[in-house]
Length: 443
Image 1 (cartoon, rainbow, N blue to C red):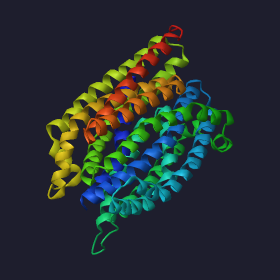
Image 2 (cartoon, rainbow, N blue to C red):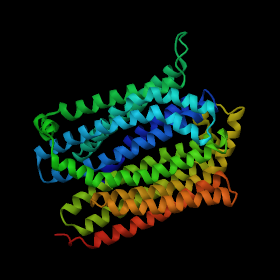
Image 3 (tube, rainbow, N blue to C red):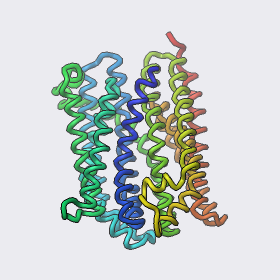
Image 4 (cartoon, rainbow, N blue to C red):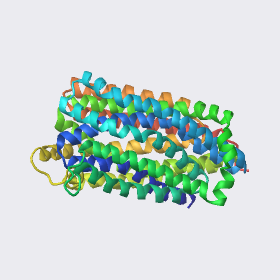
């Protein structure tokens, strides 16, 4: 029941956050397959980098939950303030990367038109990163303080606003032609600013929340919390680098097989992201519940929270994995609109990849849930090395062998990702069992 109270609102929040990126792709897809591939490639790389750096901040929720459980109001505010400062600092290298990325991708043999349109999108979306980082911290704080419904309401409202704003900025209105792919980037930047404003108002507007987030503590910060954020968060960023980096390299390799293969793969991964929001919801809820049980020395509670999240999350993902297998062209139409011309070839390629993508969805979701459960135990360094071994040695290297040496092409790269995620999930499960056994019995 506690998992559901946290997990259901978080599912909507995670779905909404990913929905903004996917809405941009779906709207831009109406411009054509090249525009879709451009936003998919450039946006995919930069948002992977964003996920890597924001991984440092994910421990904020665990630290706040621990302080909240002990009733340490001043420390809750200090941790939140430290997280906000670190988040704003981390946004700077992301903005710099936006300026350099088109040149870096030009060395990988990408289509020149895809790169040019990608640069236009990046120049517009780069302004969203300071707001995104601040929002990521506030989401963790609000969730740890048992306000997931507030996060849900803000996030779902934002994705609806993004859809409307992106449509008009891309296609124009009342004779104004719009900005094309740049419009999608500007819409994301504006909506991220609105999200931070709304969630900050919710966090600091109510008396009860203000008592946990006093302005003095926010401004003062907590150096010990800063050290904890980096000590536990940097390995989390390393794990995110292992996963996002693997996928980024795979997408660049797929781009070498042509625009149709790239667009189809981005479509499959787009569906994986949407469905995977439910895994992230179960994972976030597990991290909080495991952290609370661990703080009590409750071995049974830790194990129950982790395994319940794995069971429920995996069952939901299996159901969602079946959708593109049964309705492949309907899923493709969501991203591309009416299928015609080159879009038909993209949809057909995606249909062939959805089977492997479904397996990847389930295994990657399980990996995510167990990794967050380990995060609730403050165990991130060993899992980082395990993820690097599983995702890069098996996922990327194995996929490259299948793609090129075995002649399987794009499908080989997808099989490699599925195998890497499966092995990493097994390593994480064993690690979680070992650490749980070391916890003292419930008192």
